[in-house]
Each structure stands twice: as structure tokens, then as C-alpha cells.
Image 1 (tube, rainbow, N blue to C red):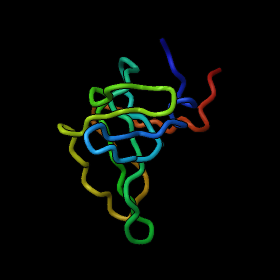
Image 2 (image 1 turned 135 degrees about the vertical axis):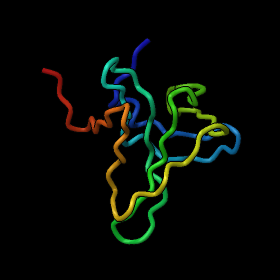
Image 3 (image 1 turned 60 degrees about the vertical axis):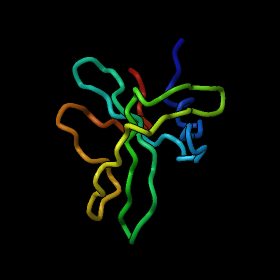
Image 4 (image 1 turned 90 degrees about the horizontal axis):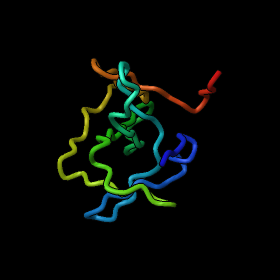
Length: 106
């Protein structure tokens, strides 16, 4: 079974133990060499002007991808450090972060 990024980003991401709605996927972290998805990224809380905190969720934390929601278990997931005055995802040494909103396959 496969799913597109366009379909993924429409689904709410719910934390399985608390039922908290974490929002919708706004980015993916993809391993350069294999093309494998390492993490999904959801927007975090908005702080002061021009700052934000994204929540990167390991792909292995996904418990179920349903018709309307994605259930995740964050018990082993840690929140990344807050970027300073930036709403862009942080660089990761072993992965390429890709914003696929405007992605078109040739």
C-alpha cells in the first residue's frame, strides 16, 4: 500500500496515549541515500514573533495511518531544540529535509 504526501498532509496527527491533536504534517525528513522517510514534522507552538517550534516525530513512532488520522506514540520521541528566530526546519547531518508542497515529478 502506498500514500502520497498530498494525502498525508491532510491527516491530523494524534498522540495515542493522550489523544492530543498535534496538527497536520508540514514537512518530512528523508534520508538522502535511500529516500526513506525518517521523520514527519508537525508545527509546534508559536512563540514570539518569527519563532516557532516544530515537532519532529520518528517514523517508527507511527502506530497507524488511518483514513482521517495518523496515530503516533511519543513516549520515546524527544522534542528538538527550539530554533532561534526561525520557522525553517533545522538541518540534520544524515537526512535531507524536504518541503514537498511545490514538488512535481518530472
